[in-house]
Image 1 (cartoon, rainbow, N blue to C red):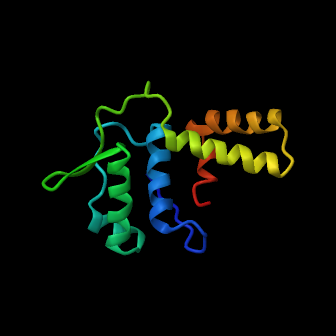
Image 2: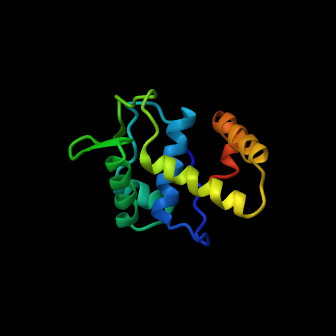
Length: 133
C-alpha cells in the first residue's frame, strides 16, 4: 500500500495516515490479518516522527481496525465484521457532511449521488486521487 501524505494539508498527519489505512482496509488493498510496518519502519519510510505513526496506530486500534502485539507488531484485525451497524461516530460524520452540503445549497439528490459514487469508487483508482486530502 502506498501512502500519500500532504504535509501542507489542514488535516493532521496522524489523521491522514489513519484515514489512508482505513481506506486501504475498505478497498481490500489491506487484507484481514495482514501485517503493518512497525512504527519505526513506517516513520522512516515516509519521513515522519515515530510518535505520529504511534498515534495513528493507537487510534486505529481503539476503533477496532487493527490489533497491536509487542512481539508481532500491528496487523489488520482478523475479525473485522462487515455486518456491523454504523457507529455513532460514522452517523455523526455523515450528519455533519449532510448539514454542510445543505448549508452550501446542495440538494439531497446531488448529495446522495456523490455518496453513492464515492462508495462505489472504493475499489478503484479514483479513490486514490482523494487520499492526500
